[in-house]
Image (cartoon, rainbow, N blue to C red; front, side, top):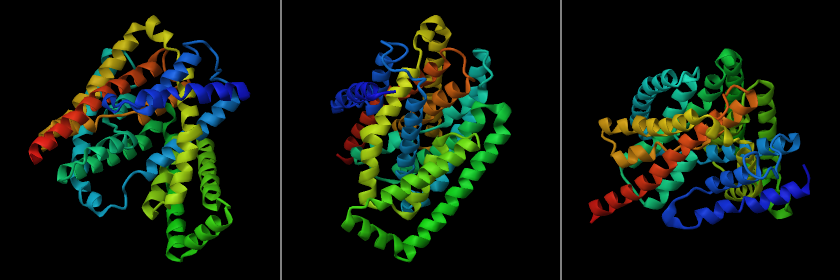
Length: 379
């Protein structure tokens, strides 16, 4: 790992914003960054060594930051969202039941022992991807609130369940680690809420802003890294540590200045580095050598869409149901963790991402469909 590699990563990661610039395409920035990693990594020119331990550590930092920011975006303080939780929970249960049936069927068809993993993937949603998609649509009403609640519940449940599902023989150890991280996150929420009530956080904020100390950022990063260290020691992904801490911060309320600083860190460097690293670590040639993995990816994507479309039975418009099927964080986490633990067969990590890309493509169409539906209804 050297400055040459960092320069290559920083430049090639700009492919993400380039592809995401045309609004009519609705392409998330991360897609271009993943593609950039594929170009310079194992599948492409081999300019980046994804196995380099320093690069891997920096990528883990990026992963933790991405999940932390995703956690802070979950609207846990919204009273309207809390009122819609019951309907969102019922729809999540229906989606989970459908995911169990389809996940087991897919595992049997492809002769895989990863049925639990497929179930988690099919039932998951990506709050970090779906919520930014629906905000610009200007949609209102109870259905949208219930959709937001459903996506948040599914995202949280999938993040907790993934470490247990991806390595079933060590599920007990992973469950204890996840419980420890959750307890620490709740304790952190208690401390942060106490600091907020007593005005200490505001005084610290003023001192930091006036003296340019960036104290809040330093403290948040120290807590994030400490919680990530506990997660790694407990054999749990930093994904859970970052997301749990993000939820704790969201429950208290994240200062705008700190949010901007974290955005600069996560989206300006560590996030793009993580996605380029992930793309560089993928061996897409395995898909050509194992064409059944291409079929697996397509089937996972279509099954995810079908699973979430079942919410139409409970009155949610089909376009909204398809919007809730968008996923990226969980498949990326599954590919990352599975590759690190060596529990996936050749080509399976790429298949998981292929399935996610299918959901994103359909979601881009569904978002336009939902907007036209709302426009015609208001007209």
